[in-house]
Every structure is written in C-alpha cells, then in structure tokens.
Length: 415
Image (cartoon, rainbow, N blue to C red; front, top):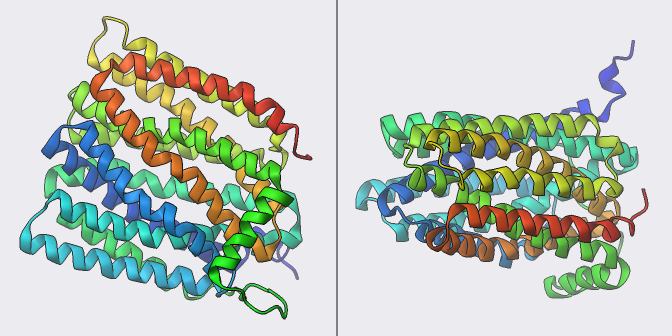
C-alpha cells in the first residue's frame, strides 16, 4: 500500500529535516538578536547607535554573499549548512565566555554580530539554492508551495523569541539567552547532517575561479535575465523602507518614544510575529496562484498598512492607543510582506538554472541588503530628528510610489 507521503515531495524526509533545522537555527539567532537589541537600547537610548550596530553587522553579509553563492554552486549544500550552524554555536559559546570575563561593550557586541553576519552570508544563498534543487523537477507550483512552507516555519520560529525574549531578558539577563542560542545552533547542525542532497551538477566543465564565476553570474543577470535584475533593484528599494523602519523604528518608537519596557516590547513584537505566521499560512494557501501579476496588489497593501501608523501620532491620544494602532497595522505590513516575498523569490528561482542558482540568489541577497544599512542609518537619523508621524507618512508615500512602479515591472514576467 502506498501512503500519501510517497506522493507529496513536501512530505519527504529531506525537506522536513531542512525546514526543521532552519527553524531551530533561526530561533536561536533571533533570541540572541533580541537580547542584544534590548541591551543596546537600554544602555544608550539612541536610535542612531542602535541603527549603527545593525548596519555594521550587515556589511559583511553584503560583501560575502556573492562568494557564498559561488560556494553553494560548487560544494554539497548540506555540508555547508551543517558547517555554518556548527561554527555559529562555537562562536556564540566563545563570545559568551569573553563577555563573562570582560563584561559587555558595544565593540564586543558589534564584533560578534559581524562574525555571525559573515556566516549568514554563506547560509542564505545555500538554503535558497537547495530548494530549487529539491523541487525543480516537480514544477512551479510545488516550488512555490515549498517556499511557502519555509516561510511558515521561519515565521513560527520567530514567535517564541519575541514572546519569551522580553520576559527572559527582564528576569535573567543576557547570558541564559546566549546559552539558548548555542544549543539551537548545535541542534540544527545535528539535524542537517541527515539531509540527503547531492552536490550541484556542473557537468564535466572545469571549475572557473571564484571571480570568474561571479562575473558569469553578473553577465547572466544583466544580459540574459534583465527583468530579474530589475526585480532585484526594486527589492533593494523596498528593503530600504521596510527593513529600515521595522528594524529601527518599531523597537525605538515602543521603547524610547512611548516609554514601554522590554516585556511590553517583547509581547508587541510577538504579536507582530503572530501576524507573520498568519500571513505565511494565508500566502501559502494561495502559493500556486501568486504570480508576478499580483505583485502590485501586495505593494498597495504595504503602503496602506503604514498610513494609519503615521496618522495616529498626529492625534492627542495615549501611548497605549498609539501602541495598539502601531502593532495592529504592522500586522498588515507583515502579511503583505509575506505575499511579496512569496511572489518575488520563486519567480527569480524559476528563471535561473540549477548551476547558477546559488550565485543568483546570493546576488539577490547582496543587492537587496545593500539598501539595508543605508535604510537603517537613514531611519535612525530620521527618528532622532523628525516627528514619528512624519517618518511613517513619508514611508507610506514611498511605498505608494513603489506600487505604481511595480505595475509595468510585473508585466515583464510570464505567469
């Protein structure tokens, strides 16, 4: 007798191990990031300093991501994932020992974040290249569903750090949270050891140098897939607004402007995480139908979700009312972002051959993330020097312009 599991590639052992390992690894990473963010804001009270730490830590990812893509197209992608999570566990353990000896400092935290970002530069393109390798033969619909499952697991993995992070940080401080991160990375590496994934098939061709490989990837994007390249540039502009506001504005407004403690922020962040899970599952339900023609609608939803957040800060209402509106309409931002990601990323993967997937997805990460440090620094400056309402309303306007620009772009891709 044949069970339904034998018919569905999404229920295969290797895919389950992949998404479980990634979920556990993400949980540890976000728990650590939450603790570090709370400490920096508590010690400095400055959005600019907080944004600087975020921006500095992401620079290595931008620089090294293309080389991570080259590696992912040369070496067994399972081996890379195992090694990176294992090294992350060792790095956080070493950092915890150093912090216990010399105490915490911005320099020490920045160094750890930079090293973790260097490892992340190799992991993201590897995972994004592994998915098409697993599911390309099953067609577009299956690949989109697989990406939806990955998004769902990532959103679920981000919930507990938000809900537990504020409470643990308030009660125990930062060291126990670092221990949780160490155990998470080590557990993920152990699970990933059992994934069965062949090395990338490059035929009998002689391997070029990494620089030549990168040049080939760039030529492929600019000459062979200009529409994909245009989509990458659009994603960079989108990240400037969305990531800049979410990474800097959301914690800064709640903690510093409205004056709430780490526990309230943790609950608020957790509630937003719930909306991310809801968005991931709703988007997953429609995954097979989410072609590029739907992209402008997701952009309109993003713009409309920011508008009420800005307007409430123009009204003479209490901090709690502002918090409720801020969190409530951030739900819309998260859900719309899930739809945008599930439209754009599989579109890029499906327009890229397997031997190029690692490099192209690495360039997606690098180009998109180039805007993140600029966005974080700009939003850090803006929140320190401008009214909250002005920053949020300008952001809504920029996303509205993006919705208009996305219409002709979406028509360049076949459904």
